[in-house]
Amino acid sequence: MTTFKLMLLGVAVLAVFSFSLGIAEESEESMCIPMGTIVLEPPDQVESKRSAVEFPHAVHFDYTCSTCHHKWEKEAVVLSCMAAGCHDAAVNPKKTAEGSVSPKEAIRYYKAAYHSACIGCHKEIKKQNQALENSYRSSSTPIQSSGPTGCSECHPK
View 1 (cartoon, helix red, strand yellow):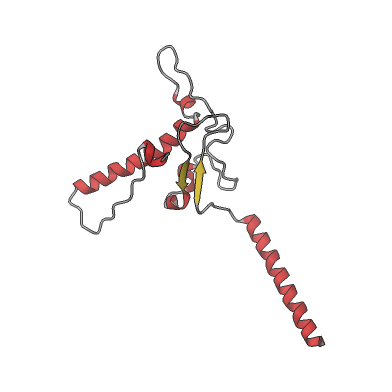
View 2: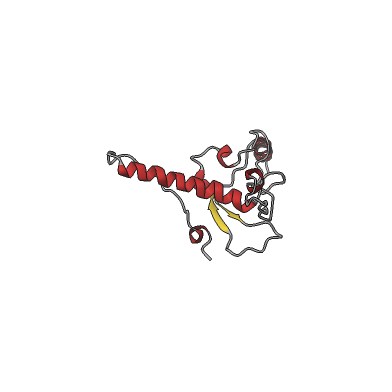
């Protein structure tokens, strides 16, 4: 091999190595956002009566991250809803003698949190859509998909 070819090969290897280092440095500073479907399952100690929910994460990118990840501090790692101290109760809290559960305790139950956030948002969108349909709107006003609000729509099996 000629000296010129060896030098060219060395420059190419150095360029590839430098490029890969740049990518590694960039990935440490950038946020990793799941683009596909996230499977939402109950905690391991819970025997589920319904199938897991396939959550299309990318469909929800019109909302800010903090809409769902309400305790997220912009620089921190995004934690799941069932992270310790958030919605980590695996058992629905018992009602008091008066027949109620404190809202703070109720929302710690993972299922109440998911249902409140997901179904609550979908019902609100459905309500807004109904108002648009009932108004004298122009045909160019887009109607947003409301998302599922029934059990079998999220839990197909």
